[in-house]
Image (cartoon, rainbow, N blue to C red; front, side):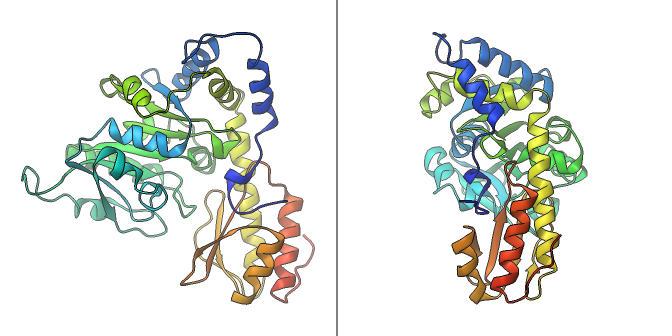
Length: 346
């Protein structure tokens, strides 16, 4: 099966899998007291700055909840996009686990700006009102777009001026950095982000994510929060080995470039098919489109993908490091057949 449903559907990158196998040699100290975790932490500092402190976790929801939990108290709130993963796809985990409120900023193609965020800061110091304390930005966004660096800096400067912390959901940070042509540190630390959820799974890893604290004064209680939040791995060397592989020799970048490049190829080809309309800017590894309703089910039967919005018929096609140009071209040929408009060979 070849799926265009999610980059989570992709296999583990062979180099990452080899790193796991290599780590599976003899005994090693548990709970992160092993050499692989020490090396992973060093690499995180290399990429995100000397003050970066990485805490490895199992999944993205855990990373987001722990990150936000380090910034807010139960009577405080997080400003985030109305399309943010913490709002739409985490089954209320931030609210349930942290007791906080999410304040939703109106977006355009998944992005929001200072004006939308500022409207949500109300009742400062009034005990009758939830107190905004953190701003959460998704990079790249749930709709496959990127924030320019200047836009992130503007949001971070505004947040800090209002006494808010800045969290970045970087489940696909690698795709954003690759598309912007900048380093992982430039797209996060350099823009004023305080705490980062860094994604490995969507970039070739197997169940490996990280909370990266970028301000030393915020890192003190993360080890205790991670344990209490059931995100502390006993055999952490296997997660750490994956990050050692991804963060060495630019594997993270090569993987992200492949995913972004095949998404661009898919979007360009699909846009040329009569009856198909690309609905969002394609700036990472997601393509959103509307196609004739009768064509959706036959196309899904050949290549699984999600209908993003049942009301409008908008669908989402995702690529990954494992997606090849030949697979994209086969998908486009199938798309042409099901909409009755054969696609010329590329």
